[in-house]
Amino acid sequence: MKKLKGCLSVIVLLMIIGAIGSAFGKDSRSSANTSSNSRVQKEVTDTIKSTKKKAGQKKTHKTYGIGDVVKVGNVEYTVNSVSQATSVGSEYFGETAQGVYLLVNITVKNNGKESLSVSDDFFKIYKGDTEYKSDSEASLYANDNTGFFLEEINPGNSVTSTVAIDVPQNIANAKGLQLQVQTGVWGTEKARINIQ
Image (tube, rainbow, N blue to C red; front, side, top):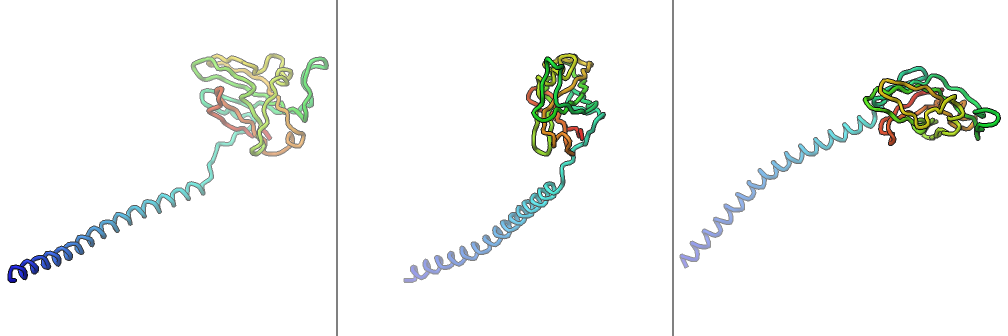
């Protein structure tokens, strides 16, 4: 009986010590977890604030206009003038616009180290998010030469030509028109030039 009482006392004592140790151990882990959770929560809050601040800031793009030299990659674009016409070419050979042609006279200079292939597809007019593509055939008639139709420009050289873009009459006279210029076939680098 004495042995049973002694064993029972030892077991109860171990259970009490275990419970006390567990309670204190939990508190230290709990405070460590609380500290870690607070740190993570602060980082998340800071990230959210930073993201909101960046979202609130407007992206500012450099504004270009007629006569400005616009560098896109290794290429310089200069819009020399913009005019309008309902048709281009001669009375026998030419094109007539569905609306009106915006005739954009542009100089393209190759500052790269290799020949640059330029196409009328490098140029588009935007009114807001609406896109108007160039008319390659009308662009041929709008020029005395071949225009930018598969034009090769060697390093250091420049070519001046006119691109015809068919737009509705109300768009041709609208404010906020922009010409998008690009480099490369895939148009990986772009800039916009205000033309109105």
